[in-house]
Length: 259
Image (cartoon, rainbow, N blue to C red):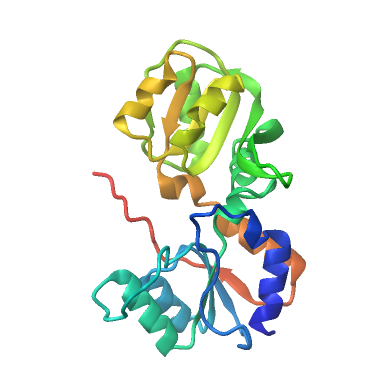
């Protein structure tokens, strides 16, 4: 199957124009005329992922995060980005990124998180003008939790060992907002939408003050919040192109470690 045929299917699902302006989505490395034999799905296209693609005879990497965010002025193998691009080109491996266009998809990254948390009556948290998607989702739990029980629930459902959170305010958790990846910009939207909790990542010290005893803020980690995106992409491709060979990467690309 030609790469451009696969790209057309992906972009019909998650159009490039629905990505954020700062993003760099689409074909990052490669040739649209290439014949694809097998695809590897990953969150990040790092060196170990390229090595895995070589080992598993995959000549396409479908990555959530783009390996190149801004233009490369040189390829000298001094940085991990340059080494990935160089190794991919040398081994005829194509790299395609589907990022904020999947964040903004009404059944994309945040819908996947909502499913993992068994939220019902979900809707877009921050709708985008021009199409029906947007950033984040908000929905209801089937039953209310105390804050501590909810923290335990999130740990189990999202498979995380550590959660950073704002001060507990002794309120029941029922309305839950989620935003995969860096989501501090959504705090006010979550409060205005009457969410009891916002689950996201990359919150800075002063972000926690914005809770104002109105909402519980949970930072579960950037990778952790987006980890099920691989499954989302795989399920779409298997349904849309059932005879197309694609697998989920087993390489660990989370750069954050805990002691």
